[in-house]
Length: 253
Image (tube, rainbow, N blue to C red; front, side, top):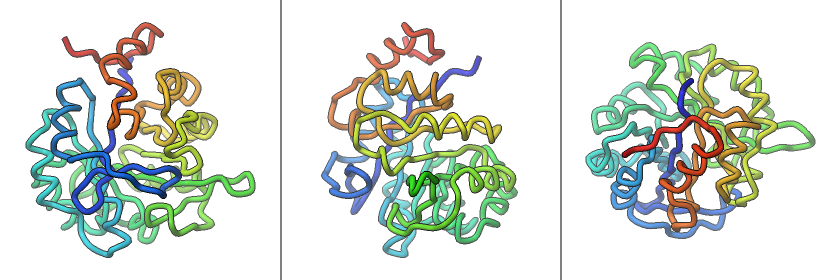
């Protein structure tokens, strides 16, 4: 049985880690490099770095900061934000990223997924999907949740897999930052429709929420930000409790 993964997320804006609720009202959460060092020591399985304003500001990801964060890590590292070409991805992979995450650029030009998978292997390609439930239908949103589309979450997830995505990072905008739990019904449906790993994002507030994402949501990994950044949940404690619930999890000795 594959172990479930616990993944802290660094949402980075202007060189600082930030966190909000429902993608707005951002507040400072600390230095990305210091947080990366902490999460490595605490036993996180991976780290995700998202330059959340790169697409909106029409610029590339902060490659120099990625290099500094990568130097502090000995766990897999995924980087996203402003990636729109093979060249963009190559720069970040050279600076220490193990995987790249694409979102808005992939929706606007789906062939980007194929190009990245062909250039680097699908194991390097994470397709992030920000979606919100509108009139009982999950709709994909772009540019950090600011631009709604008519694209259906589940149809887009299947297309992303078919084009070469190695993993999906699904964030429920309705649950983001609320600490009321993950979107487990949608996660479960996604797991039935695709055969690649799914990372659950949006809504972590307590240890039971993580457990539910794995059992009810059938997610392969759970990503969270504020509960880790502000010390509300310690990763070693979380993993110990998950193991007690018979959830396969990696615990460092």
